[in-house]
Length: 298
Image (cartoon, rainbow, N blue to C red; front, side):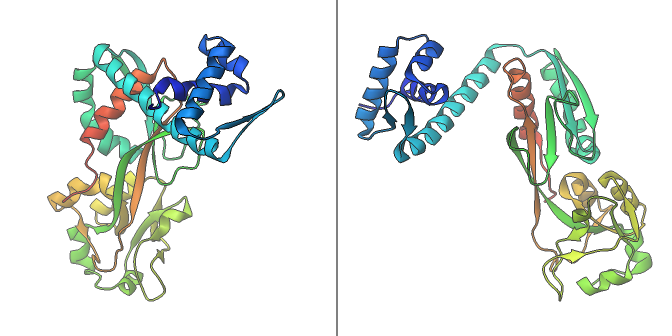
């Protein structure tokens, strides 16, 4: 006999509620039905999932392993149901999206016209902030974050990753020369961030290691400001592909030190709180934008 989805839901409900009686109330079943379902599940698996006494229940080692898998499968099933519901329903209402200014400008805004044509009843609000925000405090439905995630209370959907490149304009290189080695960077105008300091750690191999800490000749708080400074010939910057791929393709910015720059990609994730009233709007936007994002130039 194979394990069914209802077996997984019953088992998870028993664990989450702490008792068979509470799980029965949650599932709308009798306590005896839940008890029989749990016993049959253990019989199918040939192992004990819960050690039960009259006072408490405790997961066995096999139960803990099975619970992790059950939660993953149930989550995938819920997501699939939402996707199917999305095909039947017409999403509407307000959807508030937050992203750093460069990502919003270069990776989101170019696709907004197509999104609005497909989902005319969704009212978009696009907000930019170069620092991570509190989604609840800022009344945000989706935040797009670049870099390693730290808030485990949020649901995250990977959108891809974007490579960092060392870049300068042809005009700057004509005036100041093209660096041939990592050590040559010391003689150039370097464009960096005011904060955080970690963004001034460039993925450049040199005699001292695989990363180069730079002291900016000119610093800014926004990646878009640094991009504009690089385009204006003010120096060399280390910027992500999602905001510079078109500049590279058009020859407005030139990649430098390809042999010395190691492969380093910034993960890009959409994060959100799970809320059934927002699920369709969130899902349709994430499906739409992920299908169109191309972060790096060929």
